[in-house]
Length: 472
Image 1 (cartoon, rainbow, N blue to C red):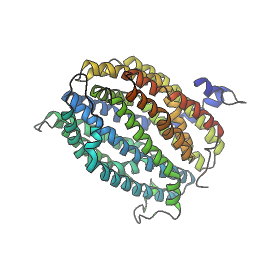
Image 2: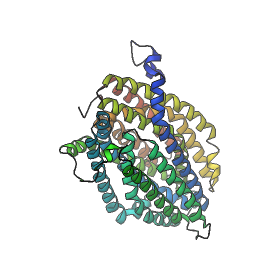
Image 3: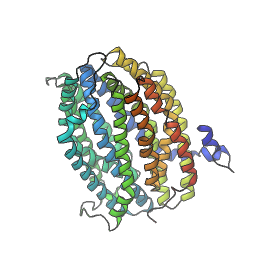
Image 4: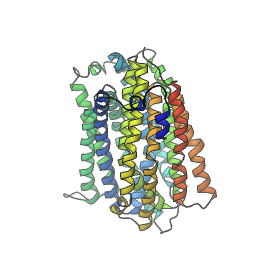
């Protein structure tokens, strides 16, 4: 794959095509480092939270993992609606059109409210049903009823934090698209430390508080989301001289004429993609759960640990979106192509080193959990498989954000969502329902499909069909 990256272009030296100058990396790091720090701290605290819940027992940990899998769909839909309007706000900012940025933010506000309303309409009456499809008999006799009760209790509290989370993402994404990455990072860091401290107090009953287990974990998460929302919103509205697009933001909630329709048309495939992709990933985990409740716990451990190491790839994806989007909006199309290629090359190289570290540490992380030896063994092997696949994930992730930055959301829909449903999910469904293949070979087979996505993404990038100035 790396060879393909280096050999894809002609006429320039490898150095000039794939390695930038000092100014390029200064710009990259200025955007990426705050995002990376934010992601690392968020996922590190998430890992610590996960370990604390895991100390309560395997059943409560599995219950929380199932609920988080359901809320993952909500989170990805919020990401999608903000990203669809963010395509325009990044380009409006690059053009210097502050009213365009304001209108894009208002559209984010309306779309977040709509996703929140739909989530409540689905989860309130059907939450226990969705939890139940993940519960299958285990080899070690784990209590399915206790797992269902823990999950249900956790979900009821988590409803309260959905709206502040959504609106905080609208503010944070707009600030980042305007080049302000430090404040969203600070807000996120503050929130995760609040979450960590309250988790310790409320889960285990410290400092005179009652021991509340998974309910305490949910309360801590909800409070932390209000903290993040408060910090970022207060900063945004008290620094209008610096953030010019915040001036008069809520004098009206109307969106500039024609822009709402453009965002919906451009964003619909992106929103549909994130919804179907997140649903597909949830279905994949449901397929894995057919091998027993132990696998649910192992998937929870492996995903939480690997997310910490995927922070570099996630940060690079957002960096690609911001840099390439601003260049396209400023009309520098050739430079956007050149820097996208260098950004993806940097991301792949970085992921190789991160993957090696993760593979080395894979056996250590599961030992931090108060769970069975079988769960630890499965989690260890899953983490190793993830580590091996990281460079391929970095390339496909970079492709996704590059293609999306130019507004080619239908291409990203085919590249991301359709691939999951047409390639990954059928493999998991067949292996889980119609064979006795153990969980590790099944998991490895699904992860190996990332190689196919790399082979699809490379010609998409070279075609330049994604290069569009949407705000010209």
